[in-house]
Image (cartoon, rainbow, N blue to C red; front, side):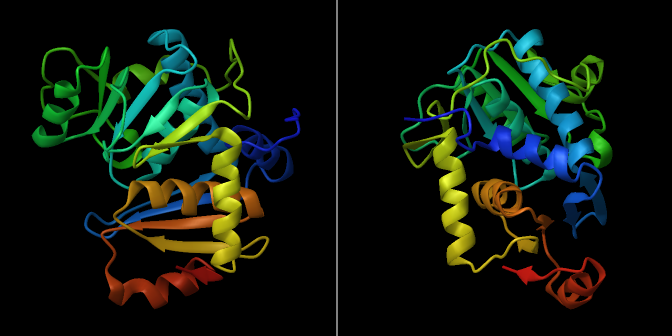
Length: 252
């Protein structure tokens, strides 16, 4: 029997907010742009709450709805996954193998991704600039596409979920296989064991894979009470200095 104590990504973030709300949870770098942003559990949760509020109250998303993330490994990708899970949505990334049609499509700036998002035929399509600090889009958007950065600020920093999801609810579809909310945590716990990640580790992950980013730089650190440094477009020559600067204890 699954109890209310069965861990999910939602409960792990809530636990982190109680134990260490102000310490670093996620540090994000993009070596192609020079961007660096550090998010505590509290600041990350504020973004999650606002985004989940947009989904639940602004877009009337219902539990079990499907959110397709056409996004690269980025701190906002992690926010979107966490927000969708908060309100009981099922998340998938750009890998569409075996995916059902999406109810909501979320795409990065750029004509290719936005065209792909529109072509999905979702009820709602949102665009993310992925510019520092969640800035607005700088170019006009196709008809019917909403600028996330314009809409999200009006939602509160704390979320009241109308229908809280259960640990056994579907959460993450990857390559046609859907895991439950608890299954996502189980996968992350197994990853931590395989990668020899210990409690409190600060993990460095450089990846082009949004699924790896969601699991290894968000759920794994939450599961072990650690934190992560997520790097996009890594300049390998900077790695040693970054490991020292960020006090990384486990580089993947």
